[in-house]
Image (cartoon, rainbow, N blue to C red; front, top):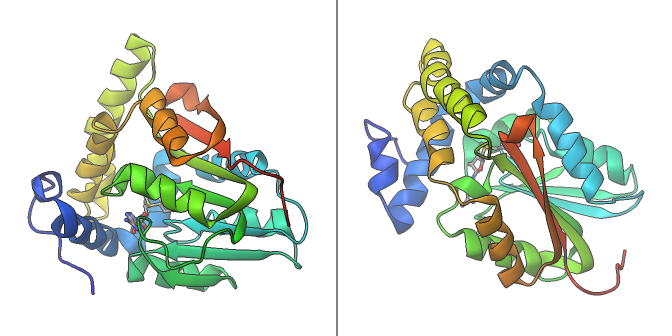
Length: 247
Ligand SMILES: C[S@@+](CC[C@H](N)C(=O)[O-])C[C@H]1O[C@@H](n2cnc3c(N)ncnc32)[C@H](O)[C@@H]1O
């Protein structure tokens, strides 16, 4: 069941636990029909390229299996499918039904309702786990990293793409001006001003690159790395579960 977003984005900031989860679910339910169009507009369609880059860090090959957590409308599953080929397996999980319904219209893959902090999946199942712009929204990032680690096979790889704050002060000032002023206006064109006010602001409250790396390391990942994209406005974190890669 999806919760309604209640009034302002303040409802999402102030809620905790289950209420926070429902507020985020409700927000994504509301923007699901226009999510892809607004995403392409805001990113000038570069989001496809960033996902392909993230998938390249997973070092997938024909016949392997990949899980996309917080799969939303399913755009990450497309390059994952290309990487694992027809004999591979791609699975998507998200907790927002309207987002999954859009994903179903463009993917032949297995898709399931589920929470990133409590994945409905057994341990040691996948060669790779990806998350695109999802970690920022989960109520417990450490737990989401532990879950990604748990479902990976030994040697499996993890990649998470998300927003970041440029390190350079001038770049940061300019990009935050654009994100905080322009993005809500673009969202408003589609009648989604609340969500597109919350989403850029959530980047300001998000963990730093170093904090995210530390969270991944404490979940058990090794070789944790990150790489900035779009002048540091996007950052991909990637890592490996220790052990030999089995497929
Ligand atoms: C910004 S969208 C990103 C969608 C997709 N990964 C992409 O690359 O476009 C974030 C998605 O994360 C999902 N999400 C947020 N918190 C979640 C959680 N705790 N468990 C599962 N999905 C979650 C939302 O429902 C939404 O579909």
